[in-house]
Image (tube, rainbow, N blue to C red):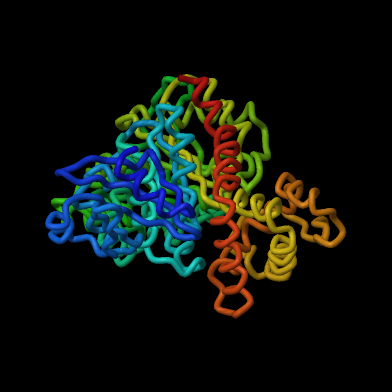
Amino acid sequence: MNMTDTFFKDFPEANVYRESHIQDGGLTFFMMRQNLDQFLVIQGERKLLKDLPFEGEEVSVDGASFLKCPLSANNARALRERFPFTRPVLIGKQNSYGLGDRLGNAGAAHLKVIRKTDFKPVLAQQSIRELERTNRTAQEVMDAASWAVFREGYKDGFGADGDHLKTTDDIDLMMKSGFAMFTIDPSDYVVNEALSMNDEDLQQLYKKLPWEELQDHPADFLDRKGHDSIRLKSGFELNPSHRSIMQGMVKYGRVITHTKKLADYISDNYPNKPSDLELSVDETDQPTTVFEHYLIASELSRLGVELVSLAPRFCGDFEKGIDFKGDLGQFKEEYEDHLAVAEMFGGYKLSIHSGSDKFSVYEVIGSLREGAVHVKTAGTSYLEALRTVAEADPGLFREILVFSKTRFDDDKKTYHISARPEQVPDGDSLKDEDLKKLLDDNNARQVLHVTFGSVLGGNSSKSKNMKEKLMKCLSVNETLYEQNLVSHFDKHLRPFVQKN
């Protein structure tokens, strides 16, 4: 029996996470769960323990000394200083999966699944909107990822994505918290009306674009792009008309300059902190055409902005929490065209936003056996938490379901969904054993998905009480929760595993 086993025989209510054991500098580090709480435990000579930057309670068992440390922000910081693998790295243009964790307790299960693939995990992935709705901080998101990596002994590198950032303040917040990937959201600068404008209005807006920032002239640009005649690897021919060029620039010209400004801000203000840059243009009214993609990519390349990934607005509907709605044949054809554009400008990844549960799309992408991909998920992990609650505490699930239905009309406003809440049965009409089936129903999934902020971040006593009971239920039923997550993400990643 080793020292850690000796320690735990005196604490029968504690469970050790065996994958976390590390011998370092004459000390043994590992994580344990005791009752509902998790701790970092360090075993070694007292004089060594006293010199550590970790904060905790000294415990002595059979003459051996231990330091029992809460998973606090200070201890997470000390962990990252001691063990570099608990700090995020640049993922670059490798296949990657964004595994948003709105509760801060899904990371270990995410890693159990990702280990079966050659994908790199992006564990710390949260948008400013998600942080606001869950009342979490960027630092809390980063700390949860570091603890998950340590707990699973995962040393192959993980990413941290400040998602959907719009301002320099957003960048500063994420940079301060140690994030290494920044997803620029320029949706405020998209002019969706460009496609329906008459020629006179279009020409006027085209001339008013910030040409100095674009380092070009409207007439020269039109002449140069008008002579572009390119046949992509996919077979698609780019031969735009002058009107198409003006439409593309009116729609995306300020997207290009805003992205350039934020990219320059990062390089100018954080020269010693290399980062990955993603551009998101998925939140637009119409799908991104192949020419629009080419226009954005070519201009950013000319202006010296290097992308690691780009998220177009694909054809069909990428609604939250359910599978793709649309023509998969069309998606495949257009995806290949978008891949060909990406290959022209450094082979950056195509990023699939609202990527949760798009199983038919995964099959298409996996079948192509080319290019690199980044998939972003978030809400689907929260739904698996609710599946666990439905199985373990039916009464609590019914409470969350009723509350979510009352919040749906307000919370749905910022999401593209088609859920019909009247089609979601009341929990009282279902037997306990049937409640979890609601997590397989599209209407129920979306109602529960988009109301996460009201459940997790609401300021009412009701919301706070529900969140407290939810977190306790998931802690008590940790094994079931992780089984549900692993099973669900196996389905997400399996099509890509087949690809490779």
